[in-house]
Length: 322
Image (cartoon, rainbow, N blue to C red; front, side, top):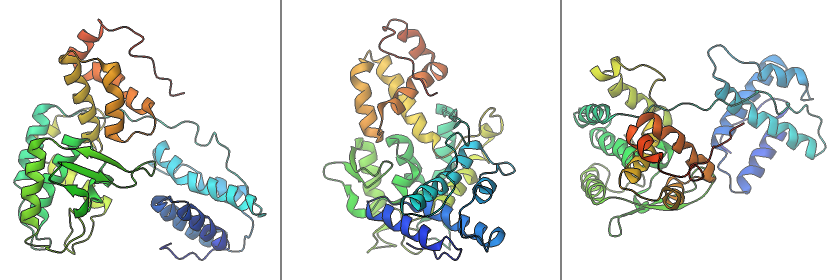
């Protein structure tokens, strides 16, 4: 527990966070949200000891320019808090499950080969920063790891030096989404790139724990990764002509998955047999999350659409997200 709480719900928030973490859940993002909720209660309901509907519904009001998915992330810990309070004899209003009504599935941007080429050419020219001596080494490898391995940015950010096994060519991913560990294997090119990077960055941070160290030798934060992406992407000529949803860091992972499926179809692979392997590699807890990509591939790759006509409809089942 790293945040101090001051509202009249302090003991309940601390108790629930402690319970979640004792069960093995990192609960980092939710703890940060509860800190904001605590400040909200201190500001608007300083004398309230009961978690009333006014408090909860006020917190659940959609903010200006807030996406419904962001609202869902913001209200979920508070809904959990109310259930926790009631379970130990407290008095709390539980936000109805239909608020917000529905999470909107983001349609990802699938990077084209031209866009990827332009982006990686830009990051390879990253200048040396006097404030962060290893930044010019970190950025090109970090983003290649996202695209070439389909990693979540948090998985790459939190990699430790001890997680890299250059001999076997594998990476150990710790407690990622779903709080599960997994091993992934790299291509020969990525193994070589990571090994060369490791030797070069070791000159600046010889005793580091983080595989991608910041200026203090520690792990980078998420906001800086997003800043890096837009620093290079937004200045590309090819990016200025882009239409549709704006690309995000997470779209490198989507592009990896869609490209992999397209390659398999182009090679005549049995998608039904290969899909579970992609699911395990990506660290999906539910294969339905991987099935989602089957509906993206035809949109971005005509070769998949053309060849998939020869595949039984039972092989590519409809995925119901209702």
